[in-house]
Image 1: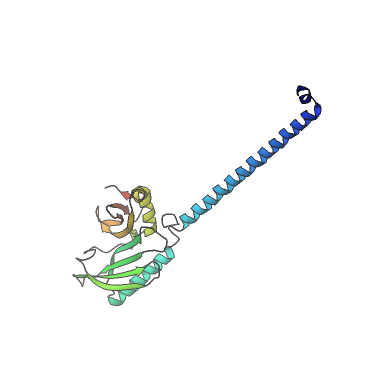
Image 2: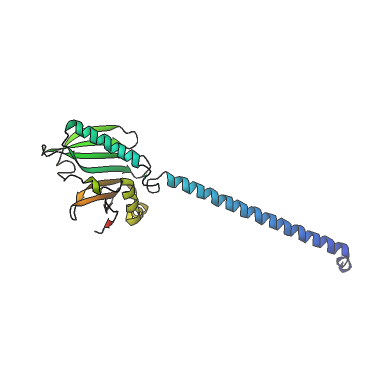
Length: 220
């Protein structure tokens, strides 16, 4: 038996077997590495696709044209009723999913000639359809002062994304958020123009106040 092991033919066969095993191991490892790379790339692609469909990840200026057009329609409809109407608040209601193009936006107008009611126009962010109504001030929004549009620098998407980085995302991760409301209005401190971002869950709520002109967060 030992004499056989010393024969050159056995040594050659053994060496060939080791070479084949080494090549096989190399090819196998290379294929596994390629599969892992393809899987990682696929997961990255899926993750990027998810980000694009969410208001927290899109370019906040990408919907500027739609938002401006929507506000112009609301202004025009308000002026048809009373040219002295002034915008006093904007409220955006979004579903907990925060999908792009979801929810509705309400524009609230007031006139010095009407001490009792506000004029409200609600526009669908999905279809662009709207409804109009007179609503008693004490029922909704109240008697706020007119918004100075010179200080309205941030749209609601930008305000939402700032809120997300300042506690909003953490709140969503630990609560089942059913709605996110963003309200633009004059308020304390200093009666400046702010976005109030309210995350509403079934049992809790978190509010983040943001300066509408520069994006700074008001510490409460």
